[in-house]
Length: 523
Image (tube, rainbow, N blue to C red; front, top):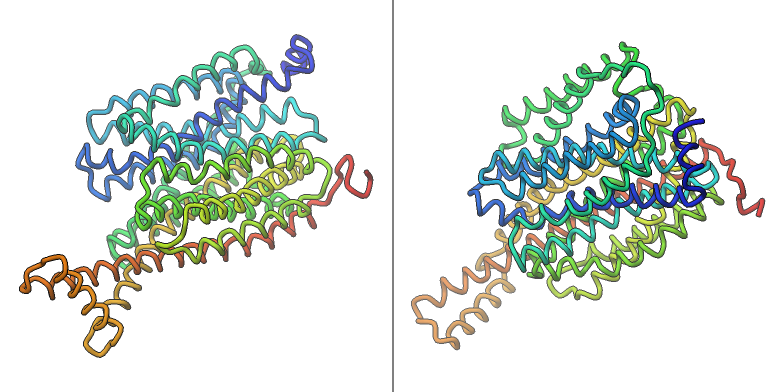
């Protein structure tokens, strides 16, 4: 008997739900760490006097560590078993959270975020493999729906909780809110997750692959994040891009040579799995892009506080909680595109609405857009994950779990970093365009200047300061419009990305085939 079968015998049918709750607690706790610290970043920056380049390490280090760590998880489970791996990862995460919360210097808090990122990446494939081990093949759509919910809900929940903690207490509490949940997950993991199946020697670890991949991804993210500040043709950016390409080539060549690679590249020879990976890469870029753009927009343009910005995501979180179990059940019965393509339709419409936002957009309108977007967030990952991994033979499922989560996270990291750069460039573009129109030949500009000057006069401003004051206010209004136009452009880019996503989503269903236990035609 396997260790999982022994535990099923001990706990009975409820064992499946005990494992589900165990991994859900860990996934929710670590998932919150992705965005909860983002809310506190301006306060952390002020406390330690960090420059923009230094602040970038908080995000870039976290994302790079999370992305690479996803591929290390299969080796950890093979070497130590699900139980020891899960408990160990959560314990290290708790230690990193304490380090971040008590940090007295910049180095400590950056180190804490990199460690948190690595643990967050490692736990995801371990949790997905644990779910797949207790759910039979005809129920894995539900398993991946639960897994997908644990990816989406923490991001929105963290925005609310993080905003409240920063407003009510201080930024250090965003590091201390998650460890109690991790401790509960550790206790449950000790009782309900299986120990290592094999008693033989542990497999060797692919250090060369891990180090080269981490360095390559970090170089790429650093180049994307700093290109606008350093200059896209600067030696620094060119060096980072060259480093990424060289180390990427080293990683691929090395993985093809060794017997126990970090990533078995054979999984990408399967067309269905390849399409699923591309689809989740694009989905990650769009989803994380929205999670970057919308909170930034409402705080910088609409002047929402952290708590109000977080409350914007509450209705969409409730929609996710309702739809995800339903999608999970249907994805075990229906071909993937029956769910993913309509969901993408809702998502594209939601982002289309967001692409028309300005400073008059209401809270209710934005909340409705997020609720529509949630239909896509709920309906896309579960069937895509389940069908992609089902394309692989059993011996490659561990690699597939790590690789497809890697694709999702890499898409999120790439999408966020690219949008940051895109927003900087579009803001400058719109600012230059609007400033060029502020001249004596522009009747609208002259009229606006006269109105502002008259308003300052009514307010009692001395005559000497009325004209320069009006010019300054008009310039500020143009800057506000420049940022607003840039956010609109950002949302249009996300909408185009979601439209492109329909191609691999359709091909996944076409190439992966469908052998569900009860398709609609069979029901």
